[in-house]
Image (cartoon, rainbow, N blue to C red; front, side, top):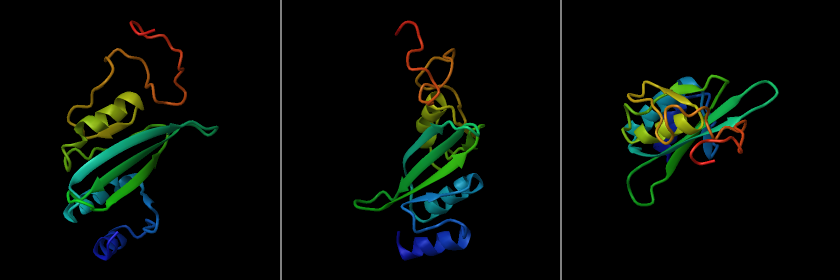
Length: 148
């Protein structure tokens, strides 16, 4: 991370440890962080990936996002947000239209909702599909016609 970006992030997000490879960011700072990165030239939306972590205290979810500058060899910036049992996070679609299908995929497979997404419907599975198959509590042998 270059000095200019580090300075901008430290000024706006003082609680975030900038020495981590993947920043841990509060959910409320997810969208503002992405907006600041876009202003700094990180205009390429690389990916978003959600994961499910069931535990004795209840479900937890984590959403990781990666942006980079669209030039050869440019570094990327990655951050993650930890969510509780009701997983929802602000959509980055207004900043990055490339987030459209990836956010819908995470909704479909893991069940994380992206608030403000213009078309929050299933992408890969039918609308009548029950559950989210990438959650750890989803039974791998669950029958689903016509596949099994």
